[in-house]
Image (cartoon, rainbow, N blue to C red):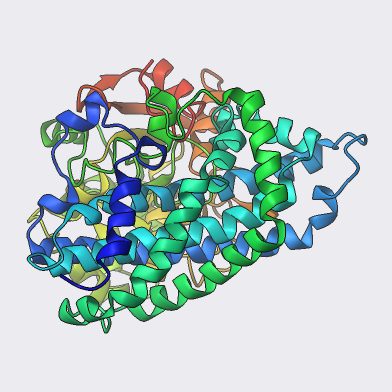
Length: 532
């Protein structure tokens, strides 16, 4: 056994007490897929994917800290002076994005928490990687969490605003109070200190596990060091004040509650369920195949996977949007015989015989990829912007999720063809982690859909307004469903309902729901997956 045994025992002592680990819920106990059940190779592969996610969350939190600095005057405003509507929107969208990154980081921390129970001698890879993910997530949470808590804590008007439920921003009730309970807690601080010591003594095991030279591991080691320095500095400088404020607030909010209560709403927004349900979407393949029969090229999809969100930092229940193009055969059958499409195609360079021939000629490499198969052997049907960039995907990736909504733009086939052509142009470009809608060089998922259908001189398109989120003009996927709801039943509506597969976490499956349920879906809190 390594000489770090005393520190590991400290971790084990903390692990045995409820304040830092939620009790296993009935849902969690019934759900297979604990990451530590994977074999070594699969475990390391999952750990590396989660480390990449952790890096993105850390960068997102750092970017938000810069946003907060620029608007520091709003946070320091006299609490007797009411916030304006614009100030409230800025504060809420910034807090919602911060909360989003924070909770997503906590999901990673909880997923790997059980590394303390994995023997380091017999399972060095799982023990070492588990520690890296757990402590990397913890130090990220504390550095940014304590910084935010120091600025926002103790300001009555601000705390009331941040604690109020705001489903449209993805915020459950008492989110700020729970956040304070997380970052300003003696058990969490003890983990920081013991983890820092354990990291240095664990280096021989990290070498043995082959982890130190793996991608992003040097980054996370440096990140742990820097974040720990920031967190400890804040604790030394303002710790007593922070803890005193938190103690008073927590007493008022109900000190009898456990740090991570078992209550459903809290357990869910802290990641209690999805931490263990790895790679098991709620929507069955048969349900996707049934919905496919009703779909047409040009349809817009919104998708959600609990705890695997592509738009971390943007508010709302629906985090992801995709453009459905169908198989090459479906694309040809839908567009090539349409008179308006044929007339338009005849004006294009080279006078192609059909729309699909134009795509093949204009984008030979992309067409070859599109006409191939995905990793599951299925035909390509979707263009979506994911972390790997704007990609061609199949039903297993784009539609076998936990929640799926399908809407049909009320535009001509010619306009849909133009939208598909634009999407092909964007395919291959990097994902836009900055959510900059004014640049075409990188694209976030909703940006791909928005720009594919953007109105122009020769295209009526879809008029979808951008919104302000933490000082950025952007488009959360939730806004597409909000637009559908606002215009539902009107003669000039822009979107029609096609299908809604509504996940049920408690049952571990999904059901087909109607337009009324879909209209309401965008109002659901982002981190509360309880079915109504």
